[in-house]
Image (cartoon, rainbow, N blue to C red; front, side):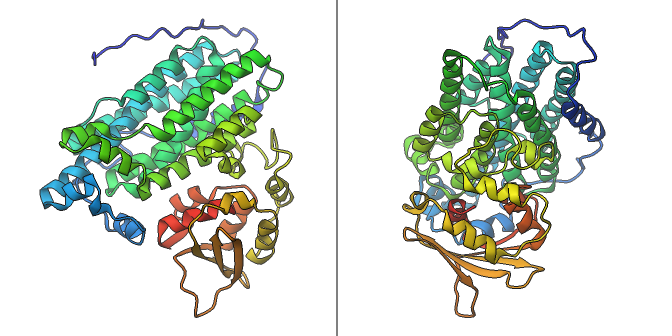
Length: 462
């Protein structure tokens, strides 16, 4: 791959001479960005020594109970052969992942510069310019971390490279906006959220936390800017957007695999790739990934019948009930904007928008009454303990499986596969649509103990 690559941005720049036509919500987001700046040189402690091949005890414990025999896989067998091999697997996997973060952030920098040049609102230009500075800071932080701490890096993955080229070169500004701010930034936000747990040292943990805060605003920017844009679009033009969404989501779901690591370590690439697809960390990442992308598309009215059909085939339509990024960031009210009129969960959230505390019992009764049995038909049986503190009768066991969902107050005889503990404020925020459950886990608001894979069965309910 050449060191410098030139890409035709495909669209003209625009001047906006009307400074009075304002978008107050974007201006509010811009003000947040100005007060949330950080310095990669001074806000990260670069004096900390790290071992890129170290696996944190927290991470080991998180997946220890998962029903997955890692040592039977190509990567696991190689790692189990010696301490040196195990270190190589972890260090190279770490270096590959952070390298893709860095490359993706440079893609976001260039794409947002194009957006800044092409948008036709002064508030959009203000915010896009601020985001360009954010993205430059992200690239700087990851580049320094790889160079000084990990001391190994990887080139951009083939499919990420192609996706960024397609996004940046598209002739329509909204397609660059949609591709970067909704799809790629949505995936990045999920990946950075996972990063705080998946990475086992304080330096990368600090970097990913700072970056994640910025990315939450960036995705909200996309939702706010594109709201209403697709409402009356010509069917031919809308079909082009549908094609792009389906193709990009298929790539992000199935093809971001560390093939370069397998090749560098001399592993059976085909076998390792197939096994990666079945791993517990892959399932967790996909859960986080599309918990952002799908509801954001829904908020824009882009979960069209064709997109819904494609997402159903990919197994990701279930995430439409999650909270979109603009609502989670407090920029939109629950229920505001495009919503699925047939989703009873949306009506429940709208009714709880101002509620500060609600016990689990009544909510579980409502949720189980309209659960889609098709969502649980293929699930392996799981017993999930939901322990909500700070409220009477807050400790429940939910049994999820092909027969549906049953729930009852926890007893001394229960042996749950996984326990989720949270305070009543967190529980209420999740049910009212103010935060997603995965984000609450990553923010430390939910304590998860047991088989993390079993916890994912609650997607069928929440």
